[in-house]
Length: 165
Image (cartoon, rainbow, N blue to C red; front, side, top):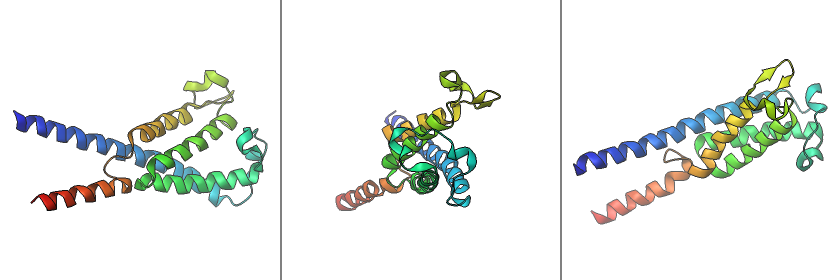
């Protein structure tokens, strides 16, 4: 009976960590694609982006610098999240980028757009909301064992096992 319980616990632990890995990869590829589009577009913000109303925290940067910072931020933080490097900090940075995007681009429909992606009346914030909730899971749960952040704990486990044998 103890064997079955320990096997079940181990399977649940591995499954949870695989879930976090899948979540990190999914979120990261979304931000990597978005960042690549921005960075490959050059240093000048496109016309539609230049006329957005940015929140006070980033409004002083201007549209061109906002475009570049958002693009490189999505690339750097997305890559770090995929690797599981500084995962919680990367997720918080991507949450901020997502909040700015929802505020400036995806809130055309107001609160009624919580379950809309794009309509004739404007853009909803369903996608940023989903990404934000996924990022919140990484912030609160951590990256899981299949992450660069988890390597020190893995090394300690092996060192402890070697000493006890």
